[in-house]
Length: 412
Image 1 (tube, rainbow, N blue to C red):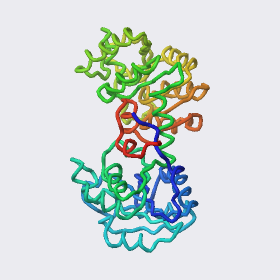
Image 2: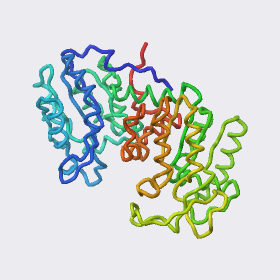
Image 3: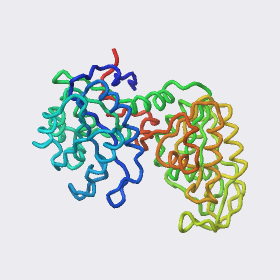
Image 4: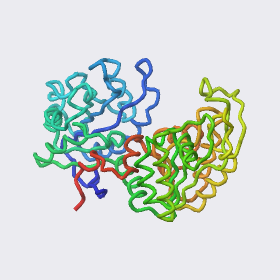
């Protein structure tokens, strides 16, 4: 995967109209933003361009927009918060057509240092391009508004959408540059280099519920890492593949042979594949999920009672996994070790987070639930990097080419 991309530091943006694809897909409640992490993450790139004298045009999607354009998924609250964070007015173009006359007029009136925010890109059906050509008209309209393009939306970079990758074709045709922003650059530096060029020993930790979600990640990381640690619900399919009884634990029957293949592959490659040696069990999944009054016991992983369900890694496994992390120089973690939303069943995930927090290794959290767990358990500031993209991180770890990364200009 070509990871040596031009960034905003490689262009002279003074007086130029620069379209920046951001990830402003923020959570909203009653029209108010409940977490502005993604807005804050975009500020360094925006401020860099403003300081350089660019005319900055911002675009992003918000939500899934299944019902067509609507005020609940408008970017109006983002414009308001962004204006507060930048300390200057953000001209929000509320027009549902995104790139219509209102947008053209707003951009034409821009002076150096001005900021325009376009409406939710998913208000245009052509944004989600399947096939890619369907979105070329919308992508060209976006390109017509600008001179240069910057992608800073890693969370969307695994999608070949009009505003993420297709737009670059038309920006290039008019002689403009297509670069990555600081947020994208950080993801490439950490996630990309961890997989392509890790400092060893390289330990990968995979958790979460289903083996199916991580098939290609397991396969790819086994070839790249020195030790692969498996936890979470997906561990029980591996345990069953070893011939163990797993009681009522989550299992993916169709993936048992795949798990056997992966264990054989690890042996063949001389890689360590660590599985839980003991398991926290209960009579069933907690209902509600955060119910603290759940009765649990710890049993060996090869002796889970028929009427019990495994819901977290046990104390011996926590020590085993922490020891593996201690000797590492690079650690990538994606997926919790158990039902971390429950205080009684969060200890496994917490112990892994703590081990990562205490190591000198480069520690990379691959988005999604692992990022949520780090934030919730108070370890976020101890990690080298927490990815902003769940799906994009997974695809990066699979070794896939991400359209949003691929579309940026390569450094010469």
